[in-house]
Image 1 (cartoon, rainbow, N blue to C red):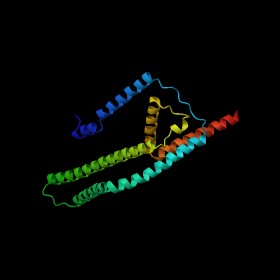
Image 2: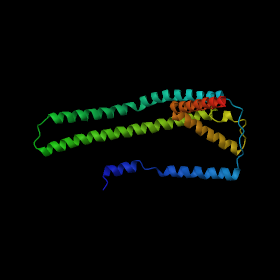
Image 3: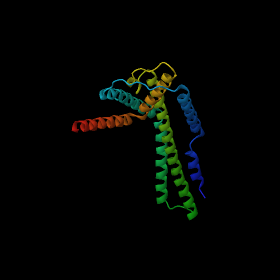
Image 4: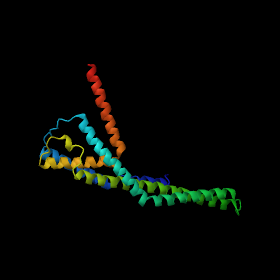
Length: 215
């Protein structure tokens, strides 16, 4: 049989029902949009590779600024909690070391119980530290995504500069919403992800250029 701790871990990592609800709503909206409004093909601008790099460079700069801001935000509000948990773990480990050297126990059973209690305290503190870091990471990601959405809503976007003309209808509204969400996600993903995209495109265009010249 599974232990109580294993059961709690499975429950803790279970995907929430709200995820399936949101996913289903988005899927329904997608089909309604496609089959009711029948969106037309959007015309792209005559863009060069340098235009794409300029957009990515701007998003990379914003992501770097956001990362520094989030470091200050996290350090100010959440570092004390992490420090307290680490201090708790350290104290409990020192207590275990002291118990190993101390032989003044009335019985072997008392020694085993004392050790078990101290070890359980360390395990509990380590679990609390993992949960704390996970919660802080979720808060940081959600905050970055929200700030990214605000930036995208002001007009700094990833896809719209590549489009010749966005129609002023329901299709244009859906497109701008998608572009805002995409841009917010790119910024929230951090500078490393944008840098990887830039590096991939650079390698792709360089290899394409070499292949064309060799023909």
